[in-house]
Image (cartoon, rainbow, N blue to C red; front, side, top):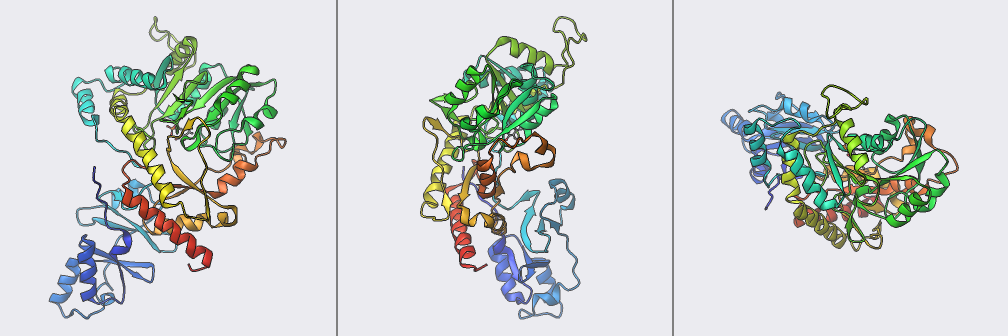
Length: 491
Ligand SMILES: Cc1ncc(COP(=O)(O)O)c(C=O)c1O
């Protein structure tokens, strides 16, 4: 699909001392019938073609400076960190473009018709059967957890992971909670978790009253480091949590062997690993249980949603029961356990099935994206590129660059500069051991140097399947220029 994006912010900017004549040209080129007036980079006001028409009909002429005609005009704007809801509330048929500023009033983006203009880090694509399947749910009345799409989605998922059982749930986080519960993880047990991860797998351990034991990651593949694992195992350890961060896999066999030898469960958190392969097999079938997320930024999405895959029938059956309030399947409203309501709806599963039908397209797109990023950044001296671990294929859920140590202090500046140029980029997750609720789980004997270093120097780049080559090239050119300017001190 050919994607046409809105003009970049800089094409819609006019300086306050610009003449009406030049402003007309800028508005014309931007094609939005509006321009944003700034003083240097500070936002002042908006000006529309209507404002100019009215000014010319009064006492002004084409040489008048626009600062004279916007003096009394009031306009709406919001801070860049405003929620979508706040942005939506400002939009009216009259206010179609909303300037977004940072805390210093510098204009950094704009929203139009409820959509941010910037190239986002991730963005879903619904070009398959999502709408017909959703219509089918609505027409049939099956909108909660009964209905055919839940079963179809779970089955389609099994075909991919080749696990024995699959169970859909409400999110990647509830998938982790339920997966751990189904393995019998309980108060005072220990579960080994990586120090660099989205926080959900660590929280899920804590929900059960168990203790997360924090271990460092490998500096190349970002997964938990098998060489540092054994040190952290005690007689209370019950499980190892393997997170495929950003979609990268690692030496899974080595981690499996440790789990087997020490009689520990292995849980694979594949939230970011849909489309990740190890030794030609999709991840999610190497451990006892594996979990997936279908949040809006994931490779496939159901809005919110998750999936658990199991090897053993007993774990699956127990999880299925816990998912439905711990209710006895032969005796309605009789509860054998304190369970949860973690059931996925037919509506979510309908979207999930349609997304799964296009999974190969999504994964190929992500792999092509990664190749293009590497190609356009290949001559860069300030960045590291990690190689895939042997026998693995990354899903490239998020493509990231790693700044060399001597410039890692510039990370936030680079991210802000990219944002000013209409490109969203993100810093990496913070090391778990540094955040107040988790500090107490860190024991000094574990060296966490890799996660501490990686967290400072990783920048995640736009990675949606909607990206076109021109945009990737433009993002890379921006990175090159920003790095060059920051290094030469030319800000
Ligand atoms: C590695 C990892 N695990 C778990 C989750 C939690 O998934 P959800 O947001 O669907 O609850 C996420 C992300 O969102 C994740 O990145």
